[in-house]
Amino acid sequence: MHQSSCNQDHSCLKGDCPSFLTVHSEEGFATPAYAPLGADAVPEPDRPPLDRPYHVFVPGVGGTGVLTLNSMLAWAALVDGAEAVSYDQTGAAQKWGAVLSSLVLSPRGERSDSNKVGVGRADLYLAVDAMAAADPVNLDRCSPEHTAALVNSGLLPSGEMIRNSRLDVPVDPMVDTISRFAARTVAVDARAVAETVFGDYMATNMVAVGAAYQAGLLPISSEAIEEAIRLNGTAREQNRQAFRYGRLAVADPARVAALVSPPPRDAEQERAHARDRLPARDRGAYDALVARVADLAEEDRRLLAVRIGELIAYQDTAYAGRYVDVVCDVARRERERTGGPAGLPITREVIRNLHTLMAYKDEYEVARLYLRASREQRASGRFAGPVRISYHLHPPVLRAMGMTNKIALPARVADPVFAVLSRLKRVRGTAWDPFGRDRVRVEERSLVGWYTDLVRTAMDALKLQNKAAVLDIARLPEGIRGYEDIKLRSAAEARERAEVLRGRLHNTLSLPLLTQTER
Image (cartoon, rainbow, N blue to C red):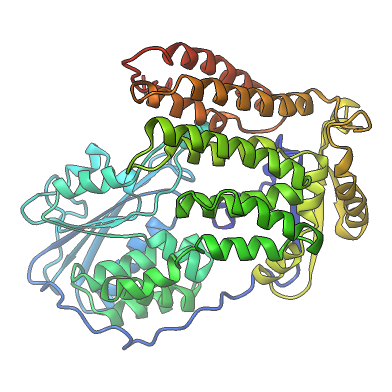
């Protein structure tokens, strides 16, 4: 769960997800371990002079602290001896609803008659939410002649993005749109900094303020801003450090990037990591399977190093071997027919999507994942003091018996059951599988064979002219999501879409298939 934006109504426990974990802690969240920055850790920027009214417009969404941000900046201006008037437009906004704040700063004794930033009047467009900031209704506050924009490029999901899991909303076009309406644009992923460094999304806005200050876009002193944070009284030290880390993100972006996005493990590191997690008896077979894909590209080998190990842990080496057989066959045929400097994109999609179908979350897998040694460590690292873990389960067998709510089991009771259940994975899919006749489990097993046959058929017909259609076929499992009835519906939709794509295999034009939202 995204703890920072949780409504605390526990509605998630009533959802269709068949398993859930809650952590009970008397002391709450642990204090994140980050290196505190001193007030002089970053050199002071050249600030714009406050010799006339300076207009700040803040487009954001409800529940993220936009009003607090605006109030804090107003107090900072007062601490600095300037004048400040503000206007907050919330309407019926709730969490994630549109919130627009205006702030007009003026020299002492020259208080502005208007507390609202008008059309083309913004000096600073403080875009704490890129989606709201890219709205034409809000962009009309900008002027390409004099507006400077500070954009938080860390995107929050909108309601439509949550409803439509296939909707891809890249943030770069939003930043580009904002840039066309501003004379200068600075983009910082304030959300990533806040959540990585402080473990709390609510620090995002102060990171954005720090970035705007260091970029020379605020005519207020850093001392006044930090004093306003102290006067506010809420999460003083975190907000002070968030402001300073926002400054650092502009002054030394490489240093912050190393904290937020450390380099991922390469193929060899992933192989060593996955191998170490396997029992000694399976490591030789794992090495042999990894050796079979040694001729693939670095990223493909990295993906496979993880997935081969996971499938061995999921079932056994034979099961992982079936996966490697399909991947190698696809890679060989793609290389023969279309291989070139662009790599093997169809193979990469099969690497991802065949694993998704083969590692479906049944009762045995849920038990295995719950028992991973890192579970307690992850929970203990996020919370202070001792923790109690409870599992909230709604397995299909109980659902079939008419139970409509999840059952909560403490870890001390559930763990021994999970230990036995995880070892029973050997009966998965056999006549002895007590869960195997469930309609969802039947469909999940069927999808593996369906997808494998579909990919082989597509590879038989592969040529340069229909490569786009084959790629779409390889990506079909991306749309198979959810649990129970939701998963069955999405699987049926994928099968229907597959029939449309089959017809395109022999169409030499082979234009990319549009999704319903794209139409």
